[in-house]
Length: 115
Image 1 (cartoon, helix red, strand yellow):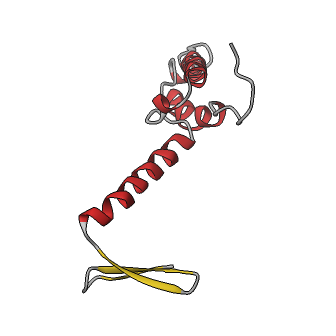
Image 2 (image 1 turned 90 degrees about the vertical axis):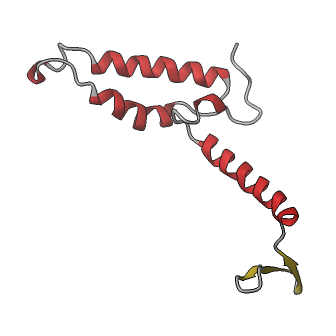
């Protein structure tokens, strides 16, 4: 359990019924700040997005490119969208936002790697 007191710039940690107060000093906060940054990176890398693309393995990044090309082919198929006077470019945005995150996934731990 963590508690804080803004007026005294102190926070406390209670572990198994034992309370310890720690002063907030830059040296004390650095490990916590690094842990928060690592946590943000892990959350960012959990699901594919254009922003997390570089955090995925090479095979997953290649898959993202292949699937996005398919999305562009569908979106720019003028015959498919005759009533719209041509292509549907917004379909590519929808494809990127909703299809790719569900198709491009990390391999399960212990799964064999594809060549």
